[in-house]
Length: 451
Image 1 (cartoon, rainbow, N blue to C red):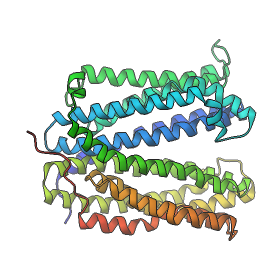
Image 2: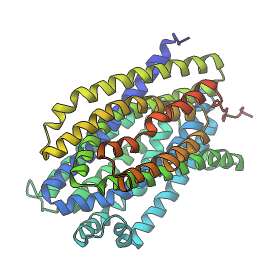
Image 3: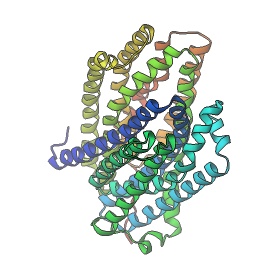
Image 4: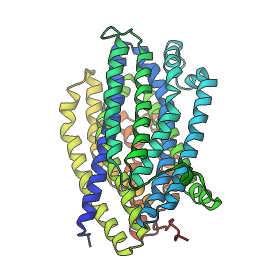
């Protein structure tokens, strides 16, 4: 029933560990920035948080481009046909540059209006404008770097992404510490110092990736002539995958701040309790994200090879592994909640509320650890990109959002009940995703035979 292929486990472990470590480092960069800005000035922290909402949207849309490349390229990689990989990587780069250029123009031409969408406080907007003045240059750089790293991941090259993230952490934290507070004889720049650190780290990331592609990479062997001589059929195939993923990320990225806003309207204790709980949950969630990313590459490669026995065996094995990891993560979250909460200074009510939320999230974690990698790893990685869009539209906008809004503002349910409803899709989505995964209707051969 389950695969005995040792290469499967070796490949999955290598891909998953590297992606998990990369995500932990990326999350740690944000945490370090928040801690240092919070220690410097509350308005600076809030201003950076407002600008980071733009970064959040950029990340989600960039993820759609990167995932599109992984879904298609990994199948061609499995079919051992690398020529189309060059073309689809070129299309990903073009889409990324278009997105980066658009974001840069918008943040340059109307920054005050954009920040006004997230806050009405003039002091926070002023800090945000000072931060955005430099951060806007990072968007095209970040998008291009992320797209190129996705191309490398699609052919199972993941070590360089981890190395780049580690270097970025060291540079960003070092410069932020120096320039935010004015240490080592440097001027005290406050929030602009944080922007300098982020911009420098982004430039360095792109430089390292380009150097790696130019001098060390032996799989992609990218060149301008290979990437940008693109026939019309490649455009059609790429955007057929990109469009559903793009809209999935748009709808999800819009829903996330609305969900946060629902809790934010309840009480200051609710905001604090949810913030603390989310921090710990996100750190453990990176394991699930790593599973999903590794599985997408692995299943795409296997579908591209056309070996149906392996496809089914790998799918069953992965689903059992997701459940085991989910149970371990849920148990870990439950057992670590008390020591974690002891770090924070909270009111008694907020502490009790945070403890209740973490107990709830321990169960939510089990469902999420199954449905997310199954949906994003197996099903999407196997070429079925429309299913995720349909499931998320129905679950988030048809069920979760209306019920959560009613629970918070009409039924006046306790905060923990509202949090339960906001995260309920992580449980009930397990049913349609399990049915879809085990009927194998997600197996879509996107890799065309070489001519």
